[in-house]
Length: 547
Image 1 (cartoon, rainbow, N blue to C red):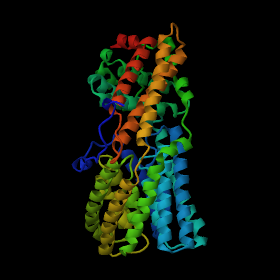
Image 2 (image 1 turned 60 degrees about the vertical axis):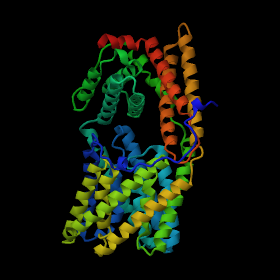
Image 3 (image 1 turned 90 degrees about the vertical axis):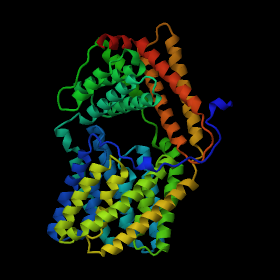
Image 4 (image 1 turned 120 degrees about the horizontal axis):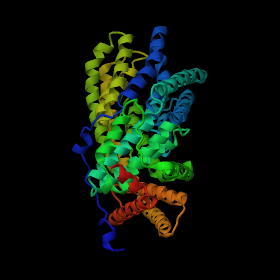
């Protein structure tokens, strides 16, 4: 292999610090999870407060926090996703409660917590459940392991979690009554804006890759939305416009794409650009896209083996070290380690910096809030609700900023059962944060992802095969429209997947050289072939007529 096909010798990468703490813009739907979690948490907690049983709030919180999930999914897909999240939350809670009822051995409890965290991590990654992913699940299950329990109490506590989970499902689905196509509209608007940015900078490879990923995500959103109603057909046409802009930027008006995206932000009718004619449904290729299906769960779990090992090892060692230091709450060290693990070591380092910064500032916030929260249980509940809202409102700008609210909330939750000594709580939290972050990161470095480079090679081969198939159809005198559209969808998905695995592999700290130039050439060739299929299908001409 020539030197032109690799990125140079393997070496340690510089790990970012300032970049990890840089604030981004707020999420366009930051208020949705923030309001949803308050609406899901408040009724159960206020009910328990009125009954004088706030000590049971941990179990209702397990179900209530499920309202944080699936806000980007169309409602048909959201209904299924939320049901699975509630089931997964109850499964982790049940395993933790049963274990706690059978043993009080701290080493056993930490070990079970680490295994649960690893299982939650890989299942959330494989099913793309998130944000917030596995962290909330791990927080509940690890905390529950250290709550004294008897076997007879387990069914009742699980029933409380199930009831709160059912309410969280209702809260999560409630917006369908107001804006039934909201998630699909947002995904389509994001694709249009990304395509406009790419068309405005046709030589920017990163902008083109981001636009391709946004278009792919928009199609996935529309394909999971259920029946193809007329508004969804109109959204499909807009995504086609984004695809055309990506494949043929020279004939694209970015301002028009952004205008359509702005129209999608409200509740008005979906813009209906002309130009696709009577062949619209054929050109949309929805049936072709549906034919690809999803890889099996087992196939998606395979590449996650290193992440599972990192999570299990890091969480277990963090808990053991916390026990050895005599810290009274090893579950906090375990959850800190669990929260770190991302797609590669570089991202894991960044999350560690964010976690430590947010937790330390959060301890300061707790010191400020504690006197107010200790004025009564009602004040305690209201403080936690406010912190829930703040965490979800801020976490989209940067993880550390949301952690400033999450940390005091977690500390206050421990006082639902009985009052704690603030100094002891803060000391334990600081120690467990430092232990969890340090040990968790060392585990990420120790467990290398040896197949990261292999996955890049496999993705390169997949792009090559998809491109050859599309090129063969283009060379035919009269290729079938359905076959050409299917080939275009397959090549587009392969190019997006190649960029994803290349980015993940490039962030591994110690690794063999990656074929970065081959990846760049494969992406460029793939986009050229996609542009040729657009021209062959006549979509470019239709778009040009509208520009």
